[in-house]
Amino acid sequence: MRQSKLFTRTYKEAPKDESSYNAQTLMRAGFIDKLAAGVYTFLPLGLRVHNKICKIIREEMDAIGGQELLMPALTPKEVWETTDRWAHFDALFKLTGGDDKEYALGATHEEIVTPTVAKQVLSYKDLSLSVYQIQTKFRNEKRAKAGLMRGREFSMKDMYSFHPNEESLNEYYKIVQKAYFKIFERLGLIDQTYLTYASGGAFSKYSHEFQTLSEAGEDTIHICQQCKIAINQEIIEESKGCPHCASTDLQAQKAIEVGNIFKLGTKFSAPFNFKYRDAEGNERPVIMGCYGMGPSRVMGTIVELAHDERGIIWPEAIAPFQVYLLALNQDKEADKLYEALKTAGVEVLYNDLDLGMGEKMADADLIGCPYRILISPKSLAAGGAEIKRRNSTESVIVDLKKVVDYLKK
Image: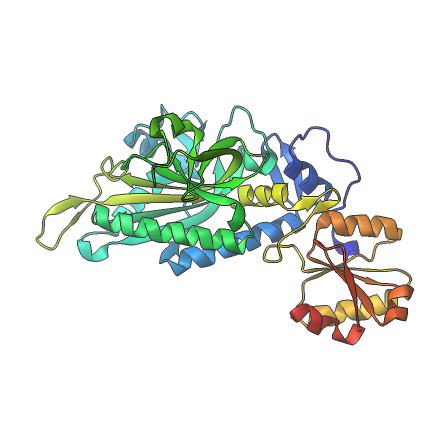
């Protein structure tokens, strides 16, 4: 894409009403725009990144049998009353419709997915199964902060599994854990992300979070130096050591929660009378699990971790474009290379704006594409285009006719 056709722009100064690095930089670089506290528009560059994160999540959920659906964001009061959460879920945005009935904007979807799946499941032959969606969620946070990591409106992948018994749930729970780590590996977060014991389990003593180490994190986790599993600060006194190996050699660090998984048991199936018939014809309760991950929160987390003093350093898997192309007095050569890259299927953002080279270089670093390609009299005299990785100080000269092959490798 030509940057002259991109309707957004970059800014030299960080917004004064944002304190978090991810919000400041994503706004400066033209990835998001702030509408209100905790509410952001994803601009074209930001949406490209967000959609790539969602694609990775979808692929890994599909790989473990998840079936994608899309549930309403507008939910009736009655379903929340069924589980007694209308009066006790403080974060619900509530409103009254033109029909004088009360509704809530979806903060989570157990109350919707449970009766939906119950209509389809009659016997043990219909279980186990899992369904998921990637959808906008709304939570009435009293204090929205930390940019994309704590918003009033945000994207969420929420998956729900349905099982005939606890053994089946436990087996699938482990499968989801492995799938989550595959996602974090593809996102470049695997080395900093820990499976973390947390409170809040409805069907077991613990739930689990996936926490990524960062000084920008709101949580404190205690990492077991023996088995490399962590414990959230909220349960550290109760556990008195690592729940996995009992070691007391724990190290406290700040972290960002990037995912969570819960064994729900019958917490939601019971209120909706969701049962199935076993092989002998007996009615039994359906056992449930819940698995959450926020693509927008993951995006903010990556920015908090992958940057330097000049801007963002996107992992290749989710970068808005693979290449940032710019030229110094060599527009014809740059135009030819731009067309060649597009023809070869290379995602390229071409800075063809009427700006000085210093401003173009600053934009390249701020936006953070994995590769910067510069065509200049100096590079041509040296044999071609100068290619530099965003996370490196070194550059190489590559013959213009071989740039595509170089990038493909």
